[in-house]
Image (cartoon, rainbow, N blue to C red; front, side):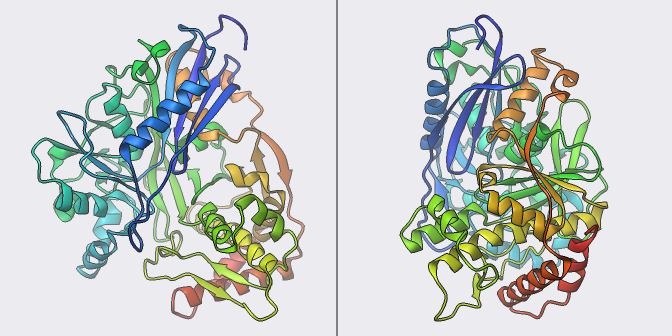
Length: 499
C-alpha cells in the first residue's frame, strides 16, 4: 500500500458474512476483513436474520479492514448486498419492526400459489421480468406488512435500503436491487401500480428508486467508521451484479457464475430478452443507461454442503475432501430444500436422494452434494443458450471455486471452458470498481486492462459419459418434481453443444 495514494473501500454484505476490502489505484485489493452473520430458522421454510446484527457485521468488517489506515486515504465507498431479503423499520426512529426475512425464506409460497392459480403469473413476468416465485421480495413484503406493518411511518426495504438509511441517505433503493423485488416495472424502472395492487403493497412504504452510481448525495460513510467522515458512497449494487461488473463479462458467449449459498448465472442482454426459458430479466447496474442482464438462480449450492456437513457431523471443507474419494454418479442428490429455482421455478419440488443403497458411503453422499452444484449450474447455462445464443466459457467466482474438483466437473458436465477469478471477493471488488470510476480514482479503460482470471479448466469428459451423467441427473430432477421429465433430452443436447 503506497503512502498517500487514494483507496476505495468495497463492502459486500452477504448472507453468511460481511466482507470488506481496500482497493488501491491499480484496482487491486490490498487489505481485507470479514465478520460473520448468523441465520435463524424459526420454522419449516422460514429463514430470518437480525437487522441490527447485520448492521454490526458491516461495522465490524469495515473497522477491521481500515485498521491502521489514516483518515483521508479512502476516496469512495462501494457497497454490494444480498438481494431480495426484506426488512421493515420505523421511519422516524430507525428501529427495526421485523426481522430481516431472507431471500431463502419460503413464507410467501402460499400467496404465490394463489396468485398463480388466479392467472396472474404471465402479467407478473411481463412487467417485472421475473417468474412468480417466493424467492423474490413481493410476497414477503405482503407478509411483513400484514404481520408487522400496522404502525404509521413504517419503511419497507431491501438490505441496501436498510444500510443506506443508516448512512443518512433517506429511504432509497438501488435500481438493480429494486428489479429483484418483483414490484418494479423492469423496463420503465419505476414501481408498477399493477404489481403493487396485486401484492397489496402501498407505494408510500417503499424506497425511492435511484441509480447504482452515486446512489444518494446525502449518504456519508462516517457512520461506518470515524475516518470515513465526508467520504461518499459512490456505488451500490446487488452482489451478483457487482460480480458480473468485476468480471467485465460484456463479450457475447461469456457468462459468469457466482457460487455462494445459492448460485447466480448471469450474462448481459437487452431489455427485451427473456422468453419462457425460466430466466430472469434484471437490471445489472445503472451509471448512465441501464445495463440489463439475464439471470438464472440456483437456490441451494453452498447451502447444500453446509446442510450435509451438519448431518454428517463434519465441516464443509472436510466434505469436499470426502467427495474426492466418492464414486461419481453412485448417488444423485437434488437439493430442492425450498423448491427448485432456474430453469424450473418449481416451488412444489422436494429434495431427493436417488441411488442410495446399503453400499453407499459418506464419500458417495459428499460426492453427490458437490456434483449437484455443477449440475444445477449446467441446467441454467443450457437455458441461457436457448434464450440468448451459444455460451463459450464460464467466468466463475465465489468460495467454492477453490475446489478444483468441482471446477473441473463443471467444465466436464457442460463441455465448456471455466475460468476462475483471481480474487475471491469479486462482489466487493465490483462495487469498489464502480465507486472508483464514479469519483475519478480510475477510468473504465484503466480497469479493463486488469488481469481478472487465473486458473482455467477445460472439459475432458467423453460425450457419452457426459450424456449419461446428465440423463441420470435429469431423472433425479424429475423425481424431485413428481413428474416424468420430457425435456431432459433437449437439455442434454444443449449442454453437449460444442463438444
